[in-house]
Amino acid sequence: MPAGNEFIAINPHCALKNLEEPCLYDIKNDELYELGQDAYQFLLRCSQGERPVVRKEDEEFIQYCLSENLARWADTPLRKKQFVHRSPIPSLRYLELQLTDRCNLQCRHCYLGESGHQDLSFAQVLRVMEEFEEMQGLRILLSGGEPLLHPRFWRINDLLMDYDFRSVLLSNGNLITREVAKKLRAHEVQVSLDGMKEGHELLRGRDTFRKTLKAIDHLQEAGIQLSVATMIHKGNLKEFDSLAALLESKGIREWNVDVPCMEGRLKENENLCPSPAEAGPFLNHGFGGGMHASKEDYGCGAHLCAIMPTGHVAKCGLFAQTPVGFIDEGLKVCWERVPRIELKELTCDCSVLEECRGGCRYRAKLRGGILDPDVFQCYSRGVRKGGELDDH
Image (cartoon, rainbow, N blue to C red; front, side):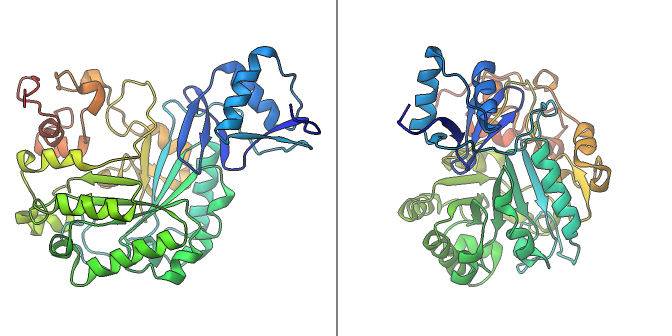
């Protein structure tokens, strides 16, 4: 122990989470460290301002926490807000909060369809964030529509760093100027970039590619962690190598690649939708990030739910037409109603089921049944009919 330092303090950017297993969550770096009960109780006492007795067997653990910048020595006790009760099981780790259905673009693939003027109230947003923290959630995803168009967005923005969860703003980027980027308090902004100029603007409209790249530059200048989301479509299949090189040159930390679902405006633009055989291989282009999954044997979305601008709660945004309740009933109450599918219920029988978790349940539902394989994932992993892995 350094001279003059008597207390161990969990760093402000970290929080204890009592999930399926006790964990320490590095909010800033989005890293989840699983803890044994002894380690959890030790850090819990530290967070309550106690001076725990350091046993010989604790020293290696303490040094690890110090080296990873998870904790530090302190001269005085530093108390930290902490929920000691266990989270619901399965834990709600990721919450998509659709603040508004207002949008500044008319993207041809948008599953939400036409934008409107429906917004969650500021009181609803505040209550949800408090409940999510109490349920020991990890990441809140602020989406829309375009979340920057919410009438109270900047009031919401000013609260984001007050909670022990990571905030991620999902934006098309076209409203993010240098001044806007400097004001944002989210830990991360995920910008949609759906190809190079031709492929991106085929979905999102004229001059959106330039504006999106400018937004990326502004966010990086402001020191905000940045990720990119890309939707695979017929118009960008030949652009992925160029897009990957562009993202590498920009130093992007995470790239999420997915396939749009045949809902909303995409129903009017079916020619944009690639087949599973065409799209599957491109699902492997993403990098970084990922979910902090538990060991529970559930399929896709076991730790996620979404709140719509109407206040309805659903399994995810794609299941908006089958909500499980209304947010005014309480987030925990609604979470307990979310239907979950165990891996053993799926009709999948391949050797990579534990890895892909069956893929997207909504895509599976659209193409057959909710328990069927997500064939886009099958093609991405080289799985042929019958559950065999392709040799190529």
